[in-house]
Length: 446
Ligand code: ADP
Ligand code: MG
Figure 1 (cartoon, protein in one colour):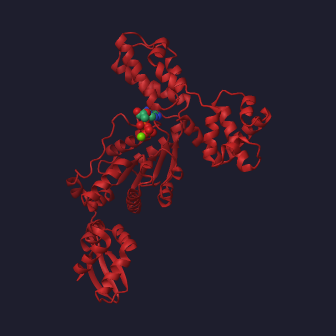
Figure 2: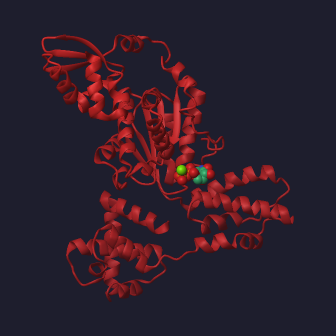
Figure 3: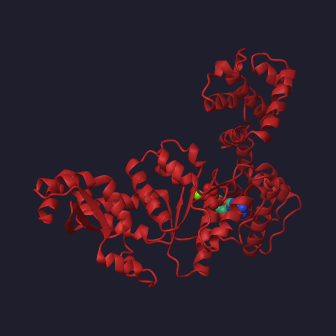
């Protein structure tokens, strides 16, 4: 009888849903109008009950069975498996399905030892360290965000590697959001959704890098959301990275956003001079191993830290090129050689940010018209963005106050000064303004 009901459900829910959610259900007893269905996991039960219980009930009733409610319970096998204290009952099947899910390779050089800590990344680093201890889950998820090349991937790899050493029995899975989607799609296509779910739900630590990638990809988001919930319910650690804060990711469902926000959200700030210098010094030591004969003038590193501000990857690339070049031509690394060899990189990072660019970005950000920002209106909804833009112009361009005033509809330099001061104050007291500034700065620098 249940078999026939299942067959009719197949027609209504479609093959994929059927294979994933209906086929694994088995019928238990019916008493007092309550039909029991056995499910492989609690999560599974929740999902089916939320999404398919109406349909299932309807089909059972149309068999002429008197049923008012469904009750989902763990199947006897699953219940046994769950209560067994053995180390991870899923270990066997997971291993044999390794072709379905291979862990992305970890970069050995992305270790905590090689990560230089400075003011802009100290919080993120501390949080990563804590998670890497593998103790009881304290914040879930850990959400790391920041601009390109600021060390998100580096920190995630470091966590994974540290956990592998400290807790070798833990099942740690690191992958990019893109790989997550790819595997999800593949599982759908190969009708292996059960395997997919089983694998993702049997990890102890799940790390998903660059999660902004799944924005706008609805079914991947959906699956990600369920995976996420299932793991959180089991108190498994989740670590996520993105290029911006959860609330700032466009085309991400609200429920996913709020889930991402419910743990610890920390950002990697753009590097400052000291951090860049620190990173360069560390990387030079590594380079010196490959080029022991090379000599480097004082001041070269300071010069690079000062001039190449975009991201750490560019900084690293510059250094690698410098050493290779110096070694090829058999000269020591002088200031002159540096400027020759890195002329293009230095020119790029010199890119000047214009007043217009700032005005445009700021008006976009606050959703007002450019003309209103520059125009005479004194409404607060225009005045505040205007002051933010003035502040950024003062900070990020070499324009003087009178020049800035002129470009804001011919305003007086005292108006500009007042605006800049106001934002400086607000930056301390108003979190929203502080965050706006950070986002805008990042957008302008990228
Ligand atoms: P993201 O994932 O944030 O875009 P990555 O983690 O890929 O950035 O970092 C880019 C490069 O910069 C990597 O080679 C990484 O090792 C290096 N890097 C970034 N931050 C640091 C740091 N604080 N110390 C040492 N290397 C760093
Ligand atoms: Mg990355």
